[in-house]
Length: 385
Image (cartoon, rainbow, N blue to C red; front, side, top):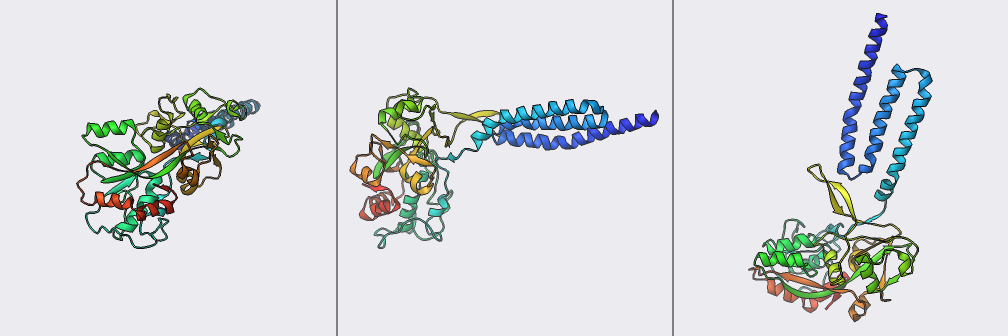
């Protein structure tokens, strides 16, 4: 009797030790799925831990006649947890088109095997010292990196801390109005960016240097190949919610957007004009403080999705073969239709300044507008003025 008591006590201690040793791994796994935005896996993780504990308990203390019932219950709970996780798994495994996330290091000026284009003859402008600090949109980095390669002295230009930086549009405008950049290359500022500049007493000067197409894209398997400008406005206003209404299949439209102050979101706002834009799809992410916050979802390439970006970025920098650019009002977005002015959603590319004291700024912008600067714009893949 005493031996049985001691043995059972030992089994209980062993059970507690095993479960205690497994608990840190479960907690670490839970934290990982939390911060990785995989919250749909959390119930499955907890069910597996409890199920393992139940199996151990039954094997150590239960009677064999109860095992089959317990195992069936466990299999049912695990199956339900897996079924509940399937939509989240499907969502996370969809191809993502991220606007602004691309390896720009391939275009770094003077680097080995750089993709930045070169002139056919030496630049007419050379700046050897007191270099203007330039920054800009991700999609325009190949252009202004080539400008720097033609005009600036040869050395390494760190994309985050040098005279030739590469940031996204919002940060580039912030750097400009706060005096951390002399010139940025980007699309027109958003209303919010204009307001910030005004509040800081800065006047933005926008000099057009080229043109680019603002494009809308869908999954390559979507049968819709062209939309009218009004149809796209209707989709992003929330008035058109099914592809059937625009000649597609009977599927609800997932209209993805970009974060505020990104270049493409500002372009969408300009395109929509006075038409209100519906709230964007969002997803829950965990913040560094451990709270769950909403973040504008990246475009996921569902067969019923629609998104937007710029022609050069999608066709040259990311080269995603799983999406197809839509024609608008029957016109495809090509260099020829942009140049001819027939593609209906064409945006100006700007060199933007905010009152820099650098003595070379005006000369540099003048050179960008010269035949040589326009040659670089054309060779890179954009359309010159």
